Every structure is written in C-alpha cells, then in structure tokens.
Length: 74
Image 1 (cartoon, rainbow, N blue to C red):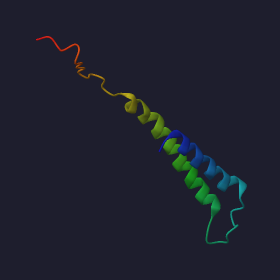
Image 2 (tube, one colour):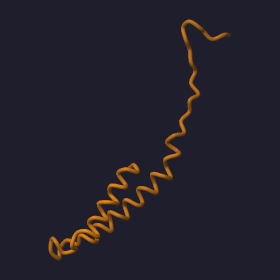
Image 3 (cartoon, one colour):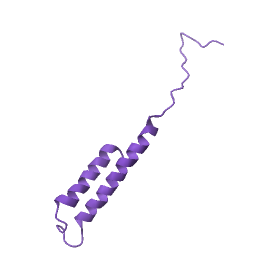
Image 4 (tube, one colour):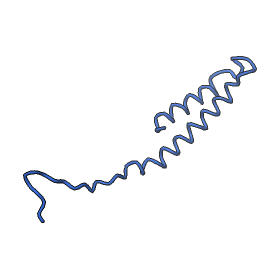
C-alpha cells in the first residue's frame, strides 16, 4: 500500500468518523467505529510506506556490459 492509498483510507476514515452521523444505518452498523478503524489502518500504512520506501530504491546496478563493437579484453 503506497502513501497515496494510505492517505485516501485515512481521509475516508475521517469522513466516516466526523462527517456522518454514527447511527445512520441503525444500531447494527457504527460508522464512527468503522471510520476510526480506517484512520488507524491509513496511519499504519503511511508509516510503513515511509519506513520501507528507502529499501525499494536500493537496487544493484553492477551489470556486465558487453558490446559487439568493443569486446572485453582478456
């Protein structure tokens, strides 16, 4: 999950928590609890994306280049 998706989930959770009445769908579904869960998951996703991002950029570029017009010397 990238930073953009995490921010989207965090925003969706904030909307469900603060902008919608908790008992819109009756007593069976608590939108404020679902919003809180989305905000927690979005926050965890942002933290993990930032922590794991430097590892993605570390790739090895040690490749042996062989060109036909310049063969390697022995």
